[in-house]
Amino acid sequence: MAPGPFSSALLLPPPAALSFLLLLWAGASHGQPCPGRCICQNVAPTLTMLCAKTGLLFVPPAIDRRVVELRLTDNFIAAVRRRDFANMTSLVHLTLSRNTIGQVAAGAFADLRALRALHLDSNRLAEVRGDQLRGLGNLRHLILGNNQIRRVESAAFDAFLSTVEDLDLSYNNLEALPWEAVGQMVNLNTLTLDHNLIDHIAEGTFVQLHKLVRLDMTSNRLHKLPPDGLFLRSQGPGPSRPRHSR
Ligand SMILES: *[C@@H]1O[C@H](CO)[C@@H](O)[C@H](O)[C@H]1NC(C)=O
Image (cartoon, rainbow, N blue to C red; front, top):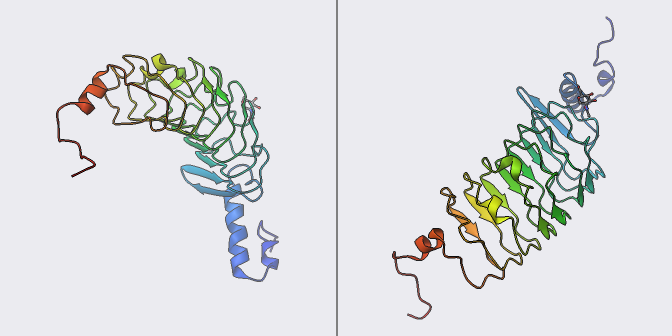
C-alpha cells in the first residue's frame, strides 16, 4: 500500500492524536495551512480562524484570503499594515480587541468590502484618520472603545455613514466628534460615547437619526443638551420619573 497523506499520523498511538492531526490536515487541505497555535475551522461555506492569546506580534501572513471570520484577540499586535488584510474580500467579522495597536496604515481595511463588524477595542489608538477605515462599505458595527483616541477626522467614517448601526467610542479622550458625519448615520441604533471629555453636541445632530434607540453620554463634560427633538421626546410628558425621597 502506498503511503497516504496520513502515514506519519499512523505512527502516533493515541487515537485522539490521530483525529487531531486528521482535523488539521482537513483544515489545511483547501488552502493555506493554519498558522501555528491558531484554530481553523472550515465548515463550508464559512472559514473561521481563531488566534486568541497566541502571543502574536503581528498579523500572520499565512492566512487564507477566503477567511470569513478572523479573531486575533489578546495578542501583542502593535500595528496594522496595508498587506495584513489585503484581498480578504469575504471577511465578515474581524476582531482585534485587546492588542497594543497604535498604528493603522492608510487603506489597511480597504479590501474588506464584505466586513460587517470591526472590533478594535482595548488598543492604543490615539486618533482615527480619514484614510484608515476607507473601503468598509458594508460595516454595521464599529467598536473602538477603550483606546486613547483624542481626535476623529471628519472623513473617517465616510465609507459606512449609511450602513453603520452600532458605533462605540467609549473610554477614550475625545473632546469632540465630527457631528455632521454622525448626523448622517441614518441606520445608527446605538451610539456609545461614555467616558470621554465631550463638552458639546452640535445642534441638529440627531434630526435624521430615526433609528437611534440608545445613546450613552455618561461621564462626559456636557453642561446642557442641545435643543433637539430627541431630547425633547425623552424628557417630555410621560410616566413620572422616580424621586429620591418618598
Ligand atoms: C492580492 O491579490 C493581488 C492580485 O491577485 C496579488 O498580486 C497580491 O499578491 C495579493 N496580496 C496578498 C497579500 O495576498
